[in-house]
Length: 125
Image (cartoon, rainbow, N blue to C red; front, top):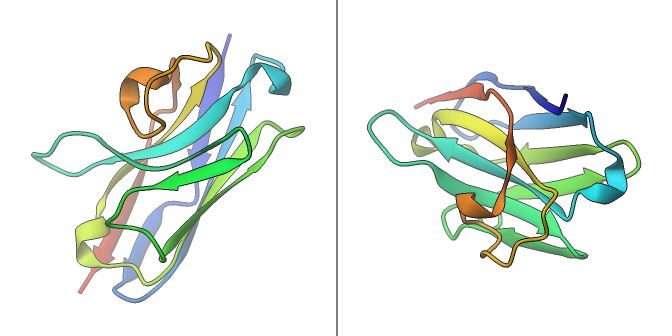
C-alpha cells in the first residue's frame, strides 16, 4: 500500500520559515520519476508550488526565490523549505509522487498518481 505522509506544517508569522517533509512508502525509490508539492487555499483550486525530477526543479512564479524543493531519492523523501512566508501562502500543502513517468508539465496535478493527506500551513500578518 502506497502512502505519502507530510509533516512540518504549522503556524508562523509573515517573514518566517517552515520546512515541510514528505515520506513515501509502499514503492521502491527508483520507481518515482518525480515528486512535487501542491497547495490549496480555501475557495481556491489546488495549485502546483514546486516539483523535482530528472535532475531539475520547477517553481510557481509566486514562490520563486522563497521556496526550495529537495529530494532524498534513496530515502524516498522530499522536502520543501519555505522562507519569507507571506499570508497568501496560507493553505493546505500536499505532497505528490509520479511513478508512471507521464509527460504532463511538472506543476500539473494530472502528472501525479499518489498524494498525501496534506498539512496545514498558516501564515499570519
